[in-house]
Image: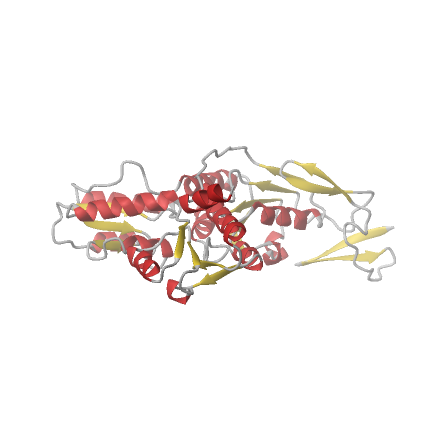
Amino acid sequence: MRTAVRVPGHMAAVSSQGRPAAHRTPRAAGLSAYTRGDCRVLRGPELAWRPVVKRVLLASPRGFCAGVERAVETVARALELYGRPVYVRKQIVHNTHVVRDLRRRGAVFVDSEDEVPEGAVLVLSAHGVSPDVRRRSAARRLRTIDATCPLVTKVHIEARSYAAEGYTVLLVGHEEHEEVVGTRGEAPEAIRVIGTVEEAEALEVANPGRVAYVTQTTLSVDETAEIVRVLRRRFPKLHGPRREDICYATTNRQEAVKQLAAEVDVLLVIGSANSSNSNRLVEVGRAAGVESHLIDDETGIDERWLEGCETVGVTSGASAPESLVQRVCDWFHARGVTDIRPLASVVEDVFFRLPVEIRRTASSAA
């Protein structure tokens, strides 16, 4: 017979005589797998350890949005249609696992279009680029495929239109983010980036009666609303988009985290460190009073975070594949947790067609 002991931050199996026992994987322990909810659950005649927590709740919705699915599929289809290599400007989406997988399949990621051999295939990332990038790509005779998220393209069009009408355009967002760099490039002489309430309060413009705003698509909904309230107070004639620029997926995932926060002791957000929307989910969790951590995958989990906890919440940013959620579920299964389920079920039915360049080439090859 085997018993389990809990050492802070560590799970170890020992024999009934107290001697250390060889580590056993769930499979070696006779555990089998079946499907429950969104994840596989392990079960068997005995567990080699006690559960690290009682339950895990999964946020819904979570993970890939329509724009990310479109961008990743664009690179995959380009590799099928054009062969290796296909060049991608910057990371196609901000997730290390996605980038690593596409690189293994033949994608070559570059920081600039200037690094791409003349005449080669270049995919533009989901975050969008400035007109200068497009001009330089054309000058190098690159076969450009535009994987920019349509919701980001919408912001570009708004910014360009406001600037053409003589407005000072306030771009609410993070100045160094690729999406903001690309949008600002539409009219650099007219666009001012605003990142905080303090910056909004201190802003001075030449003509306060001709001011408009647009926003980055992956911001915190609550913080952005606060900045816009300040801008409206300071510039009563402020113009803005008819529909908010923050992506539907960003909004939905933040609302799901708010709902989850009321039920959990700790929140794990699956996403890479450079993912804006994933970082915003961590901030939303912390603002709700829940200890929240960003992890790239299950290897980033620190068991010390779970000490004294009964319920863990798990969500994933819009650029994180569902396979990473499954791996986190498996991590908890392997530590004895069988109660793993979605907190709610919300279906997103947004779909974006692949770029026209892909569709035309696929049609010609058919």
